[in-house]
Image 1 (cartoon, rainbow, N blue to C red):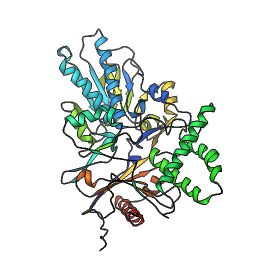
Image 2 (cartoon, rainbow, N blue to C red; image 1 turned 90 degrees about the vertical axis):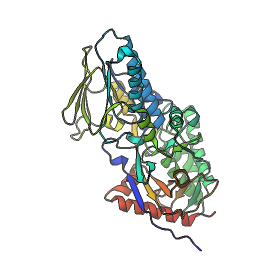
Image 3 (tube, one colour; image 1 turned 180 degrees about the vertical axis):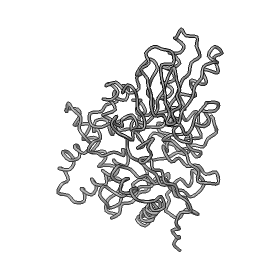
Image 4 (tube, rainbow, N blue to C red; image 1 turned 120 degrees about the horizontal axis):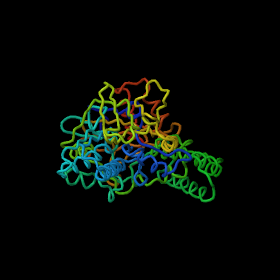
Length: 461
């Protein structure tokens, strides 16, 4: 007897691309961008002002723990400066943003203040535009105690990820995920996942060989069009494999492959496959656990940062959207690069920095872009879709549309969360725009459900 494919009993749609305070999911390097651009972005702008966030670290870019580490680094810079100063006046530190970078910075400084008696008068305040902790690593409730990450999902580079220690210390449950053996299907059944993986490897290898001799960078699509496509242009079946391989790369990168650096876009050390785990209780549980005692002002967007106050005491002036003013000694700003990149002539600009960031920072920002990745989370009465003991609950659906299906990647979180839940990833600017524009959350959830049905029907176990 066949199992009835029931519709979801609840859903959540995360529109990070439309959120004015994120405008995307993570940072990627454009053609010409290098890891040094990230390093430059993380350098102090003045004696009192520094940026932090996943875009400012070379070692773990584009990841939640990269943001967490960047916050620790910014906090160390701040504390070193405070400890070397001769002033005996109380210090006020403002952290903008209550995501992983902001909370890790605030926790480090707060802990130092309360552990050091002579610094007991010092104060740190976190200013957050939204009404909750987490930023792009926000966890949402599906009811009945079920928590799901609507932003960042995985703890990557597990063995070297400092957030793992915090999660285990708090008794959180970490669920292992193996991306190397997904339960996958192609719409026409003619292409195997192994062929897609082999083609992706060919593209990566071609890019690596190209950059051993080329002096300048190029796009991933340039590598595909000039090196890979000519090899298979007369083979319709291999062209299909190539098309689906492009979908696979886009699902990992979230950015137009005509603009993504072929030198670094696929080689930055933050992609899947290094013991990745997700957190049953969600990333926000870690951030909430380490933020105890910290003064966080929610629903308080910052609209102006005046940072060039010279060497005067309280040299940073921060103005909120309600015209509340904080005169601070130090400011750690953790807003996404999309907010920093907004044009000075944009009438809807979220944040104004005065004076504008120096050329070193604006040039680095010009070689980065926010990847687009939105989520649909569906909860069901029971699990009716196929499962495989070897899949570790990663599902892939290579549809027959241009560059693949709207939901190439899916996570069956049923075993990890204890209830039937599937998380769908909408990735890439054009794909997300096509899916989201003019549609209600209910309509988008319906599209995700249809994709799960089509994938289920295409699976051959």
